[in-house]
Length: 233
Image (cartoon, rainbow, N blue to C red; front, side):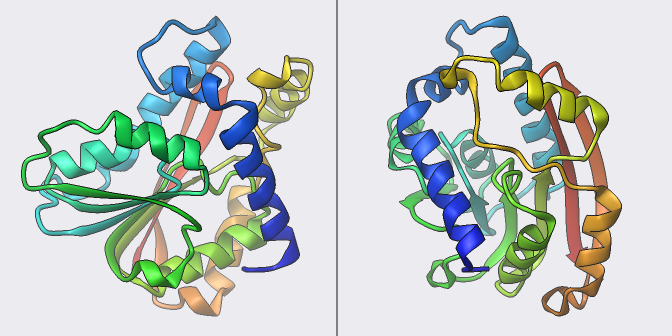
């Protein structure tokens, strides 16, 4: 996974979230007023976050959870409130800083350890569950599969993640999105065919003993993303 393509994409994503769109992302992930376009994205992300959380055990007390690409920490907070011991990591120091500033004082028995770095770093340790919401959508299918294999090697329970489904509507919206001011743009999202991804997962030696579980596509205006679950076979 630590190849030139992955590293180049990771650097572009870090630049975008840490410099180009830090203010816009801060507003998007808060309750501040936003444009109609961003409102649809906010609504879609809210639905996606709720979906991924619903696929985890309701009681996460004592469970170790990796929020891979935590952004401003909204999912991490919800998991911690359910008792999880969360390691929340993102490559953007700005977003992690915002997450720390917004951290509620009372998480009950849950805990969040915010970190800046690579979600694939083996030094993060082992986990019961991994959640990767909209952090793999900027990579090719082969790189997504390789990343999942690295995460699976340190996960005993489930991995829930999202990818950008290859649809005609998504392709058109991304083309239109290039006309928006730079502050409204995200790094290029790579549409991935679901069946292609499933085939790669099934053929990946590092995912032997794992299978695809639930999947759900969420479309909300300019937000389109698909959740998928990996569980031990």
